[in-house]
Image 1 (cartoon, rainbow, N blue to C red):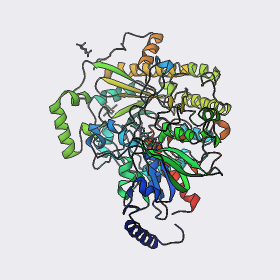
Image 2: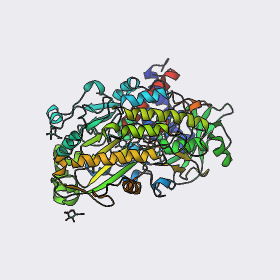
Image 3: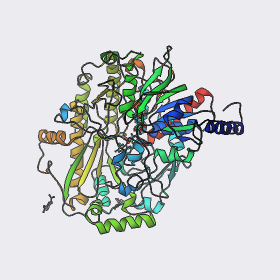
Image 4: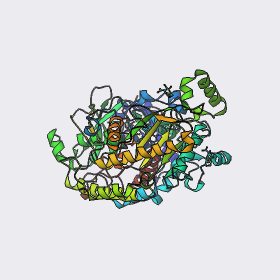
Length: 625
Ligand SMILES: Cc1cc2nc3c(=O)[nH]c(=O)nc-3n(C[C@H](O)[C@H](O)[C@H](O)COP(=O)(O)OP(=O)(O)OC[C@H]3O[C@@H](n4cnc5c(N)ncnc54)[C@H](O)[C@@H]3O)c2cc1C
Ligand SMILES: *[C@@H]1O[C@H](CO)[C@@H](O)[C@H](O)[C@H]1NC(C)=O
Ligand SMILES: *[C@@H]1O[C@H](CO)[C@@H](O)[C@H](O)[C@H]1NC(C)=O
């Protein structure tokens, strides 16, 4: 805010409030608004989607009392249920998009999959697994080389720190659990509360030791820019209360009395409106349950934060996307951007069921099998904030993140043959030449990362009971998100094209065999973990294993991204390094759609940090506080 003092702004806001209250207009405090309030307000910024990115940016922009912001969110508000707040009571299914179905996946036996995503004020942060990690420095370097200028590790670190308040672990506990804490990379006063759990199951020791004896290193602080090794899992959990810290709690609830911060929940943005100069001037929206289409006006900008599935849908419905697709639906072309909805990827995952016949008890399974144990642990959590309930239900405390060459001795031959393949061979047939050019660069960078020891190929998690879950971090396959109808309430055609590039099958197989190696180390072998159907330890034939892996693989780890990439237009990019959509004005994409390539890490930490960074960029552009 430039000329007026805060006091006079507050005073004039107060006068306006009294006036508008008298006229029956805007609500007294900000706040949850109705379409009627929206119709009576001229907003500076309208944000489509109230997830991690949307709420982070809305919070920061409304720090300036002269700026008013409307967030429109498809979902409603959570009610502080245990299944949202208490890690041991996780899983908030009611706040997800269900169903959000993919198209049939040819490389996965033509099956259709649900694509997990949050649909609630707070978005993914209300429903996610609370794993809170950052990528390797190398991966952000690759973003920069792809054209995301100013998004290197050193650029993002101040924003990672700004976004969080990290409660340091008890040093004796950290030493016993084999991890360390580097205060120089953590924040002490940000809105998002994060911590390390203060509990692990005994079986985690066996697994940790096994992962180490399989050749992996113990990671130090997993958030310091090297994402490889065996880590103790940091979580987006408040270190004092041991409850989930999600975006509604960190970026809305504490500031909801700001009269300039409005949320319209249970409404869906259907379209961005442009004027004749192709400047975004507002949005069309409708009740999520169906009903009349309404409009809202933005004086400065429209910011898209609807997530990597729905942001490209909104762009395409608005006439910003591949010309051919828009013409197919008779949508007037505002900007022909072939990259909108291209470059879609996520991280495929599998679950390997086990029968651990000589396991250590209690383990995570005991919570489900023994109601008395479960009740006692819940009581321990309520009174002392420790025990299994501090861990996300179903998760243990450790993850292994091996680089490819610590995963398989075949790493160089896999990479050499991948490098000899025509990079365009497995892209969708009609891929635009600019998108192809961007992909060719991405592919060579991924192969480079996989040849080194700084970027993991996968993530391995044993839950301490009967299940291993694996995540495949570096897929070469690329999918698409395209409208299949002009009805904004219809799910777009989501095509992850998982394993369309056969190199991905090799990477999955190598990672699977690495898990076997870990399970065969002495400290795990004593527990006698037996692979259960459809796997079996007796199956060693690689072709047969690939068939089983295709049977169990899922396209998603809920890490969807990259459908409006921050790359040059000539490389199929959609936004510039300030997240501004090419060929139009007043429009940015601020959610994980802007990522050029998926990162090793689960997205949350980087999404909060990028929200902070873009809020600063927008403030600078308008000379705000
Ligand atoms: C089940 C699950 C588990 C996960 N586990 C982890 C984890 O452990 N660690 C981690 O780091 N990440 C995890 N993630 C991923 C992480 O939560 C997401 O990557 C992150 O939330 C993405 O942030 P975003 O701002 O891009 O989108 P989101 O947070 O998804 O927000 C997008 C919002 O936009 C809304 N929206 C969509 N379309 C419209 C529209 N047309 N109009 C208005 N609003 C709209 C959606 O309802 C949603 O609330 C998980 C996600 C899920 C679903
Ligand atoms: C930490 O490492 C030591 C030595 O490798 C091992 O004995 C111990 O069990 C580990 N602790 C945990 C919690 O993994
Ligand atoms: C697990 O293995 C034990 C011992 O071999 C066997 O008795 C039991 O039936 C198996 N359980 C399952 C679920 O396969």
